[in-house]
Length: 336
Picture 1 (cartoon, rainbow, N blue to C red):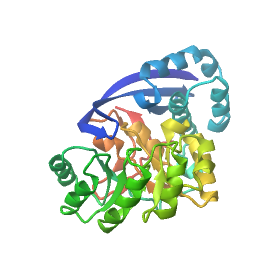
Picture 2 (picture 1 turned 180 degrees about the vertical axis):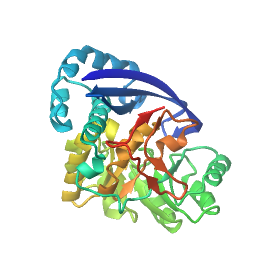
Picture 3 (picture 1 turned 45 degrees about the horizontal axis):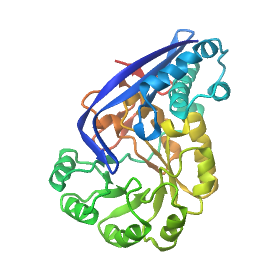
Picture 4 (picture 1 turned 120 degrees about the vertical axis):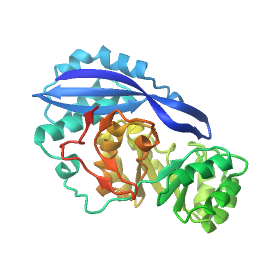
């Protein structure tokens, strides 16, 4: 098996702001794994919040390149165990695991969702994200992209006012992501107003470790609450069970499709709603997420839609939210 690593700087269509950061570009690492004339692709973006850069991920892979290339690849699950034994960080694991799954599907000649025994007759619609900005610019972004479902990033002093103004311009469903910026009291206070404004659920309103605050929210909040920063890896799913109504799984954070599938199974066992979210990433990462769609209640896979230009072909999301799955097997990815 041969490894190829490429770094890309993705240009965003708009400055993207959440409660803790803003950026106009996104560094990302694409890994290619090749075997028997087929190449599978995986992606992991850099993320300062999690101390992950393309350079650090590349260095990790280069340090174990010989071990990976000498591995007798049979399936992604066994390969993942090998990768874990090498002590790689989750973002690096994700890129390699996504590439391994794409490669496996291409070697089998089938899309991953079919290999996993699911079909695409039903799948949730992705939301489209509106980052924090002035109210005027947030309205402008909303009008620029008519969509049936919006995720609104909040974490300002005027959060309810922002949603109230956005509601004047669309009848679409809203989801709110405060990215850990609220207190329990703010969450409980804001929720009734937001519910009246057509908000479906709140995502990670409190800091990740504020379990006491989440206990209060769970008892008193009139809207469902989905864990994000509180649910990073497999062991977090059970921890989140008593405090949240659902979990948002990020492939980069948990280490790829292989652990994500186990997290989905555990979450369903606990009666949690299951969402998979994305980073601001290319179609490489988004196409991997799309393979999980039949297993999900909610999805946030708009990362490539936020870019000025893409670096790959794969899954296509149409303007009505419909997903077109490629004829190419695996995750269906080809680099441009």
